[in-house]
Image 1 (cartoon, helix red, strand yellow):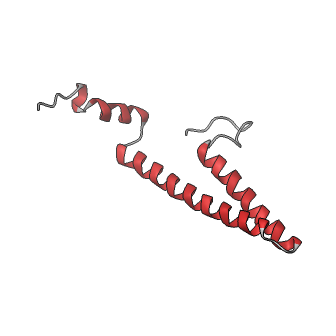
Image 2 (cartoon, rainbow, N blue to C red):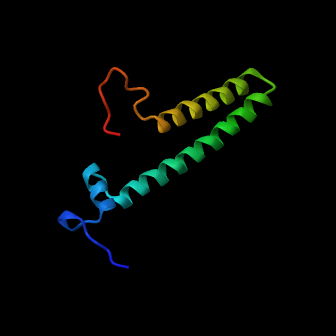
Image 3 (cartoon, helix red, strand yellow):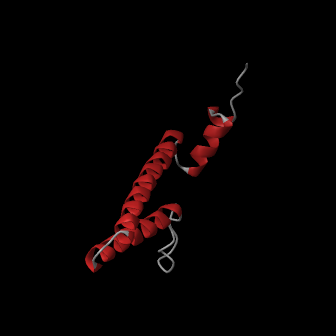
Length: 93
């Protein structure tokens, strides 16, 4: 198999990632770390839900609900990084 290089000595996929300003391995690391943090927030939200549902007093119910709300809001900001920056200009992400 012959590999033909594009202009400037880079393969087309490498040229596209260079045009975006992000290296391929750096982009994969960012996606992997976002996935890991998302899974941790899912676990934290599930713990909060279990605490809130099984609570016998108001304090644990409030704590579990707050934990769940934090996990949902944090995950929403992971999915859409500019979600809470409406009036502050655009983000680079």
